[in-house]
Image: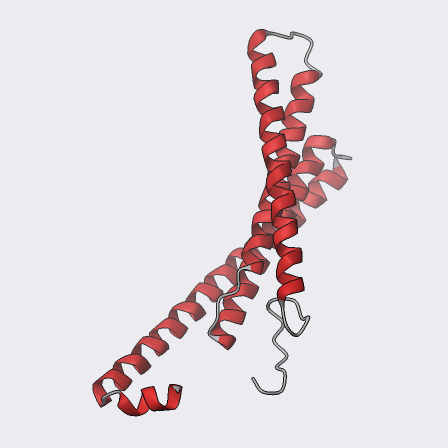
Length: 176
């Protein structure tokens, strides 16, 4: 059916389609390059933070900062993978975005946990700190629900795939 559609298109439509396809690939390539540069910069920054934490025998705050940077780097790599797969297959899959959302939610949980820990260990407990702690607990509950939902969605996507391969697997099956 696609062949019949190609035959019915005029030469101008085919030329415009080709130009748009090349433009899309050029933008994907530029985006991929910028993501790769950003990821390398984040990796260097994370390595520096890790070195500082090791030298200072970093406490919880330093360790959390290192983990935060590493999770950010993981998010960048997942997005870069998505761009690469989209360029190769011409399809945009939702699983990598769910994974990025999952990583971002986990990052936020870690930050809230550290902030809540600092609040609860403070000597001067006030109504303002109590309200902040309550808001943090509500946000943690919402994030827990969001994380469970994303994990369930990823699981269902894996189960729904015909070939049993995870999204983004670039090996082609016969007939593709």
